[in-house]
Image (cartoon, rainbow, N blue to C red):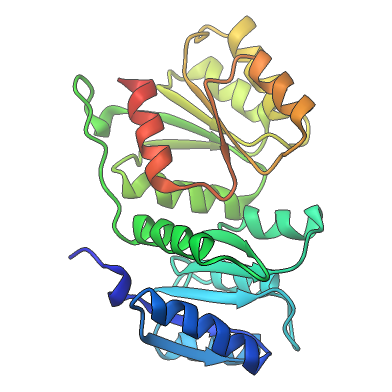
Length: 263
């Protein structure tokens, strides 16, 4: 059964009582009333063990851990790793935020955030909770074979869950471009989904190899990356990437993109 905004159970993890009230008021204005609050990561983990919410909306700085550490703890536990997580933070450090993106956050909202940004993030949450299978004209979803390349195990798990929710679960994994090259030499794939920043061989080098040296030069390549350097992204596009998606990515956008590329 599909969930709607007013069905969502949300846990706010925020040390400031004033901020708790502000966020609660914004959620109420969108028709969301099933809201609980806590102040620390430990309280949040205890709450989750009693019953998982649909969404955790957390600050970055908590008294006992960071929002990033809370998210990683949730993702590393098999019983909680599917919970949607939304970060609300004034943090702008790329390295700190990249650790959050890699772990599979639904969205990162600035503090203060606009009502429009919050509504968009909640719609993305619903896409995660109400996945739609791909509908392809000439291809059977079960037969589509995907090569997923990312050096982060948490990122691979998150992307695999998103793809599996679309009915795409025939997935081989590689931790960098070199491993991917070996798999490509021994297997045929319908789609490559790769990260940009990886050791040994990065996503740009892998894409260039596929387009120039592999036996599968026409295979669609989706780059899923938190990279925002325009010159680097331009180099990636020149290497022959079919599409670039941000981390975190919007499941509905990815679903439409894959459908377009494979059809």
